Length: 453
Image (cartoon, rainbow, N blue to C red; front, side, top):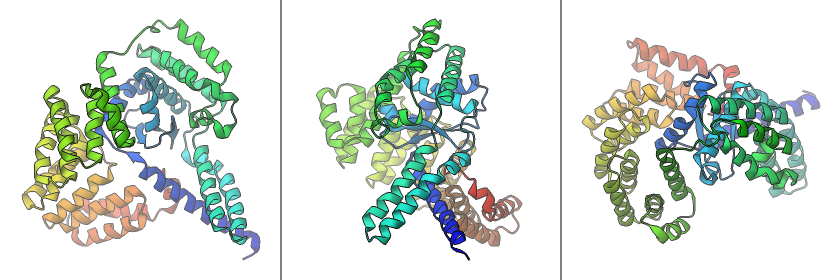
């Protein structure tokens, strides 16, 4: 093996490692929350329909990142940072961003994530070379920093658009918003928010500006279109405003410093938004009594809000009060009966009771949840537990195979699928699915092109 070939092989191996790391980082930072997902779908699905996109083909992911950004990757997947939701003043601004990202999808600006990842190879390899140099020089810390830095640069390149693509996405977004009779003022407010950063050096700019370049010409062009819109004065109704403030309060409670949240919310705890973030912050501080007290007040005020019952169930469950958590979980599901994440939450609590009858009910709930959402690894994990409770080892192994298949751990997916085949010899559907997982797990070319989520 000559030197060039060895170096090239090493680069490819390192690149694969970086892509696996990227996949792990993305998966680890994805937040699943029924309330927030429902709100994002509520404001986005009309836009997707207006853009003639298949609603079942476009996925929205909540990315746990404080930077104010949203981006498209892997063709038709929109990642919305928590920092963006927390920072924008109005749902109109968030809707504007979603319309803009839809424009990128419809325009095919980043239709294939593997192309973006291929472009990311250069900074990774440069970082590798510098890292190797630092390691040879005996500076281990510098080597690690350079290697991690090269990965971060590459990740940033995954969602980087040109000025022409930005303009095209803007024009498409306005068209979509006009079509659903919504104001495009929010788009302008977003651009105004970042306009002054265009003159800053790239390392001082917001992630949003670096990945979505802004120019004065772009703003002027958008201003002209917005001012001509017949829906320029259209305002969001009270329901949408309330829902938006509630998801902001929930994110503040879960992601901000709990002491800061409590101090801020206590200034006017009569506001339902402050009470929401306060209940979460108390829960994070292990102040169970205070958290439940706030939640009960909220439930008394809004008895048909499923998310308050869901949070109460979560607080009780994670405090070790498993049996008590089932009541609020059941209530939340009775109010929102087709919500898959609520089904999984209740099934998880039922499984924790370690009872065969409860496991049977859990299986029913989990199967129903899969009809709405097959990409939740927690669903498959709980299904494996449920099947093992009733001694159905074949389907328990198959559920484990499905879970590992979703996470990209093809070795373990194949392992559990093969074990499933030993038990599901006479079950045609389960047998065929296990065989498919084994075959797909061995298809290396397919997994090389796989999206991280």
